[in-house]
Amino acid sequence: MATATIAVRPQTLGWSYYARVITQETRYEFLKLFRAKAFSFSVIGFPVMFYAIFGLTNHHPEYARYLLASYSCFGMFGSALFGLGAGVAMERAQGWLELKQASPMPRIVYLVAKTITCAAIAMITVGILLAMGLTLGGVTMSAVEMLELIGVTLAGAVPFAAMGLLISFILPPNAGAGMINIVYLPMSFASGLWMPIWMLPHWIQKIAPALPTYHYAQLALNIFGYAQADTSMTLHWEALLGFTCLLLGAAWLVFTRSEAKA
Image (tube, rainbow, N blue to C red; front, side, top):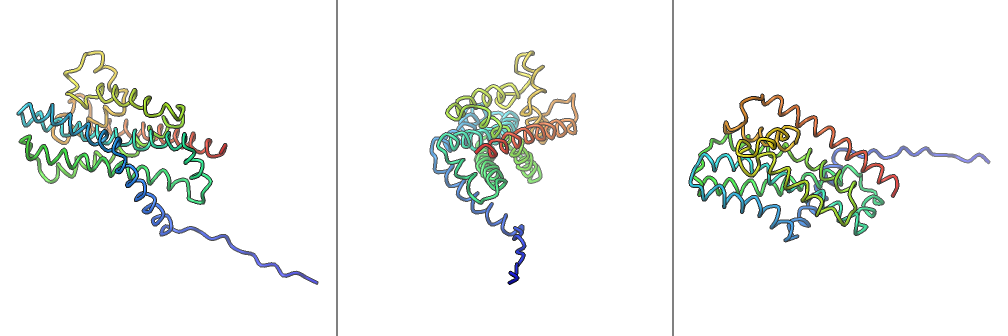
């Protein structure tokens, strides 16, 4: 007797499916990070505290405007490194990442949701800094400048999320948060995120252009006319794009290899 066979076409997942899953996963990630007091107080609190100490006590609106741009970048940098880098390292140590990899959820959703969450946390920081600068620091800015600052700040989500992911997979899981601080604090200082770059030692000014955070900061500072005059903004965008491709490629390679071994 001949047996009838029916070919079943595999179901294709559409954009609506990915959008729904990313939205749900992002919601859970945001609630998890925001409820972690140590994370929210440090990632949001450090830029706000430093801005209150150095930007508002100076009683100079121009200096407050400069630090408003630099500490906005500082907020995104910290949110990406600790939210994604330290977060993934902790999930590796707890075995939660292996469970995620074994689940049917597309792996791209895991990374996209964490990146969006880090950007959202950073936007909370930027909002607080803007409110402080406009009300207490005597900062004046147009609506266009405000939108440009938000846009440039968001542009740092992908490269620094990739940096955090790369660090989380290269380092031992239990050493993630401590090692991220070794990257986070020196890079922020050397890039002029804490104080104007021209106030730093000359040898630091020489190595600053090799750091992605330097180019990131220059893009934000250019909005208010405080960027270094010897380079064009196109060069800073190209440098940041180059760092993004390099870091994202390396992070994706390490991530897929770790998934294959799981």
